[in-house]
Structure formats: structure tokens, C-alpha cells
Length: 286
Length: 209
Image (cartoon, rainbow over all chains, first blue to last red; front, side, top):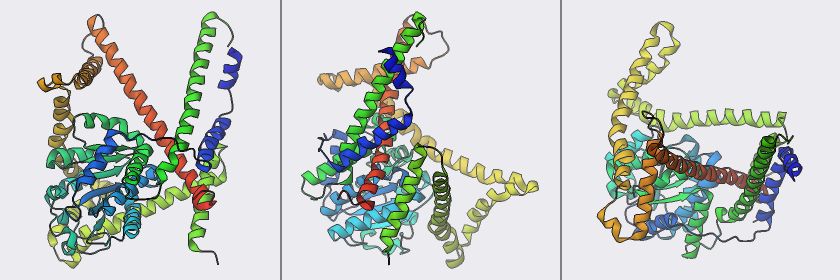
């Protein structure tokens, strides 16, 4: 028995990579629709967007992810935008990360086309602005002064949708979609300083750090990683706002299978570790 | 004539496979894709920052709107390059001092409020919590976790006796925190792989719709 585990611990790690690849490819080709339970934090974000009256004050989505975190955050952007545009909830898009400039524009224009929403009336994209915390604070004073021109070079003072929007007071929800520390910066600068309602959509790496802010209600909701995106997609689909199954939902089978493979290896690795430690204590050769 | 979309999809697929080839072993395809990524990322960021920040925040107000106040931040920004001139290297201290001072001033107040005061408030027991047993249990766990973890980082007294018990409880909470963070990290990395495989199977090979 000992020998089996010792041999397993010396296995060429490329076999493990191969097994992980198979555990991802097979469920994507032959999905078995593993059930996804919606957490209350995702439900909270959905409920807030669902309660915003159509054609009223806009929500603000800050796209802050690049290609490296795109598989987690991009489906979130599409799901939230589908929800908003299907209900005619207006959207202001901005980005605080240069990488995300094109991705934000792509998500907004794709979903706007899908639902026939008009630029300037239903949504606006203000593009990239460096400075992170300075930008967050500046929006609290005047969003049009922070972004004098939109992504396409038009003066923001002439955009109809922004006529009545001055600062966070007219923005019912701020949703940063990010894989970085800006998730907390929004809480500090927009939340604590200007009392804006903030709900984060973050990569899974960031999620565990943000639960503390959920407990103190500084964060109104949280979409955590691919699973958070899949949960939101499911809510949007269940409510009848879209018929399409989202990309995150399709990825959940692969995620669950891959997790099972990794858990199996962690258990086997630990058994091997304890057995070899016991052998070492007895003075046996492992 | 190959459509442009198809061409870009094939280029993206080739680069994805070139990066994955590192899992087998280091090779020239991986090196090529890696260097290309670094170069393209740097150039992309430079162009985006120039057109979205430098032009609207300095060039337009200064040269088109003739707002000459913008000379001051422009000059302050230029001083960052002073470090390349040996005799004038010290001038970089001015923009650094301005940046640090400004950010510290902007951050300390709201940072204390969000990270400390509100979090402390959330960890305190309120008379209303006693009405809901579930909430009370949750809040007690949070309180024990905070006290145990904080005591673990208290180094002015040797950890023995009652203090050792408390710090051991702290260690358990820290370990649970690490475990949760590790689990989420695995999920994040798995999601990245899934994203790329979805691209290969959907956009490139058209094996799934």
C-alpha cells in the first residue's frame, strides 16, 4: 500500500495535467447539467437591479478586468447587462484598468444590440481614466467633470442620459467587475465616503477577502468567480429576461468535474504524506 | 480569401496552444507567445493611456482650450523623468511627495471608516442580536474569531496558559481563512483554463455551440 502512494507521489506531473485537461474537455463536450445553487449574495445583486425602475437613474458598471481574468468577469458583465437592458435599466460603463477598455466596450455594445438599446439614451460608455481612487472620489463630486468626454470623444455634457446624473446620489448601484484590490477601494471611496451602494463582481481569488464586508453590510451583494457569474445567468434566465444559456453556466460542469479531480489528488497526496511520515518514524525506508 | 474573423481566431488558437505547450516543457513556441504577449500588452496600455488620459487631461485643456493652469500638473508630471538627469535627480521628490501626500490624505479618513470602524461595529454584539439565535451564534463565532486572531498577533507576552488557548483558537480561524482563500484560488485558476478550452472548442473547432 505504502509503495503505491510513494509511486503515485513520484508520478510525472504531466499525467496530472492531462487528466485535468480531460476533466475539462469531456464535460464541455458532453454536459451533464450539474445543478447550481444560487447564493444569497448573488440573489441580493439581482434583487437590487430588479427593483430599479426602468428608464430612471442609471447603474454604474466599472469594467476592471483584462484578458487574464476575462473568463470569470466577462460572463458577469454580459449577465448583468442582459438583466439591465431587458428591463430598460440605464447603464453607465467606465473602466479603471487600461486592459479592460476594449472588453467593456464589447460587452456594452453586444448586449445593447441584442436588446435594441440606444447609445446615449439607455447606456453610455465613458472609457478609461487612470487614478483609481482619485477617479472614485471625483465621481462623488461630479461625474461629468471626471469624464468630460465619453469613450468615443463626445462631450458628456451633451449626452441626454447624463443630464440629471451628477454624482453617486443619482446612481442606485455601483458594480465593479474586477480581479484586483479596486473591489475594496470602491467600498472605501464610493461606499464609506459617499454612501454609494456597492455590489462587487470579482474573480474567485478576491472573493474570500470580501466576505467580511458582506457581514458588515458595506457590500450589498457579491458575485464570486465563475460560479457567481453562472448563478446570475441562471437568475436572469429563470426570470425570462433571456433564453440563452450563458458561458459561465456551460463552464460549471467542467468546473465541478475538475474540482473533483483536484480534491481526489489532494486526498491521495495527504494519505501518501501521512503514510511516508509514519514509515519514517518507524525507521522504515519509504 | 480568408475572412478576418477566422484568421484572428486561428492566431488566438495558435497562441493559446503555444502557451499551453509549456506544460509539456519549455519550447520556442512558448517563448514566442510569451514575448509577444508582453510586447503587445505594453504597447496596448501605452496607446490607451495616451489617448484616454494624456490627450483629454492635458493636451486638450492646454492647447485647444488654452487653460494654462494645466501647465502646473504637466510640469509636475514631467519631473518624474528628472531621475534620468544625474544632477537634477532630486527633483523627482516633488511629484512623489505630492502623490503620496495626496493619496494619504484622500485614503486615511475613508479607509479608517470602511476597514476599521465599520468592521469593528459589525463584530460587536447588539441587544437586538439576542432575539435571533442563528444570528447570535454567527456573531459569537465572528467575535471569537476576531479575538483569537488578534491575540495570536500579540507578541508582548509569551503564549502560554489562557493566552495559548486563545491563540490556538486564533490559529484555527486563520487556517480556515487560508483554506477558503486556497479553495477560491483553485476555482479561479480552473475558470481560466475553462475559458480557454471553451474558446478552442467553440470558436476555433466549432465542436460546441
